[in-house]
Length: 261
Image 1 (tube, rainbow, N blue to C red):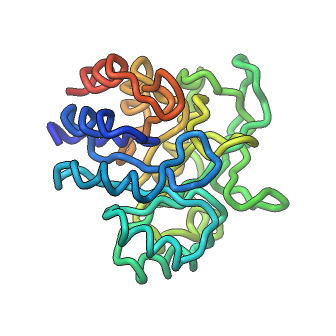
Image 2 (cartoon, rainbow, N blue to C red):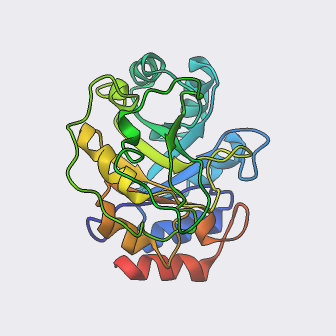
């Protein structure tokens, strides 16, 4: 890494993209092992790319709702160094996986919005997202009544709120995973949506003292603002630096990293 800003480029499918990302100073690259998704890469192909990467870059394998044994086998086969879970994996599953593989676990949580107007105003009560009970929602989702979907920072700020509750959804993963990754919810895909959520939610999530990786709608034009707003552990970017799904755009990548380095 060239400085303290950690950037993960996810959805790598080509070796030339991986090598450029490493050259530019990325903290990590991500490989999607979720079949029937636009950026899927086979374990064999990812292993070939990983073998070319310098040792100082993290290789993250992304999975969703598969068995411990399958993840373990792919981790061994490919040489990934971290595991990201993007499905409905329980805290206990994450803990068992960490013990089984000896690798740090990133648990993705998709933030669902139910208002899509850019002018939508969110009240303090609406933004107590991380204190809500999941209820009937699938457990990988959090519900927020806000409409920040275009990659812009929210047009409001939060005053001080109560301390985080120890029965919240995110808190259940404390001491079970190494990181939580907050991403935008989509009915049709797991990540890579190109849509952002209210960054104030990510700021609130940091109160749970689990390192937060910020994803969702980040691109060369808004990534620095997102980082300065949230101060996350790392940024995770996929579609915002692509010319097509799974194909990274060299110009966009250089623009992104030049904003930080």
